[in-house]
Each structure stands twice: as C-alpha cells, then as structure tokens.
Image (cartoon, rainbow, N blue to C red; front, side, top):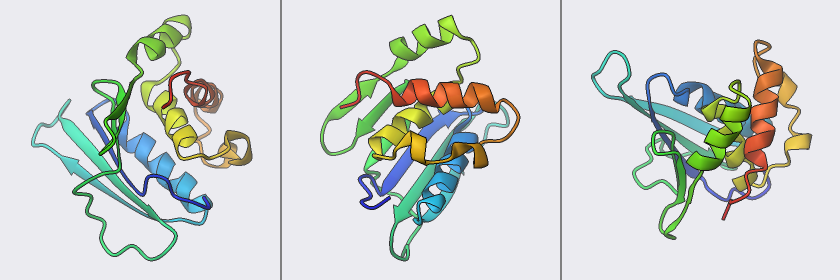
Length: 156
C-alpha cells in the first residue's frame, strides 16, 4: 500500500457475521503490504449474537494509538453498507449481495464485503497472492466471493 486512503476503519456487525474473520484477513493483507496494523475488538455483554466492532488502524509509520474514535471508513455488516465518514458518501450493497448469494449460497457476506474494501483501499486483487492468506478450508469459495465483492458495481 503506497498511499493509505482510509487509515482508520471500523467494521460493525454481530456474532456470526464474520467480523473477526474479515478484520483478521484485512490486517494480514495490510501487513503483507508493509503496513503497520492494529486491530482491536469491542464486544457487548451478550454471549451469542451480540454486537461486535473491529477497529483497524493502518499506517506506514509507527502507530501512536490503536483507539479509533472517528473512523475514516465504516463497514456495517448488519445494515449492509459502507460509509466514507465526513463525506456523506454511502454505498448500500444489500440488494446486490443478496442477488449474488441467491445465485450461489456459498458467497459469504464478510468475504464479499472484504472484496469491496480491498477495491476501496486501491489494492490490486491479482497482485495480493491471497492463497497464502486465506485458510485452506473453503478457499475456492472465499476467492470467488472476494472477486464478486471486488467487482461490486456501485463503489463511490
């Protein structure tokens, strides 16, 4: 990553939506791009199905604080939207995702959304060598979901 477009990212969801999986993959991808990364999770008190946020800070230099009080980019897996904070720009990806998932039920929401994020971060999907990062289990389905999200038609 030569230029970090959105250095502070918040991924919001609830238990079972794959917030941890998605944020860990994004952190690993950023690290492979020679970025410093912090990843902090915030949970509510519910045991199952409770709300979870993942806050990531990406930087070329040393990171002073892992706290994200004002994210540059918010990804909401519950409402299925991505918002560039401070600009008023928002993409609701629910209908497009649901259409893709109807055609292929193996398309996971979190991995599809990660594909969108990689595009927003201006990372070339073909140059990332994701086979080294994605777990072997379901790797083929996850690669397909990433590519679908990367090709999402309405990204700002």
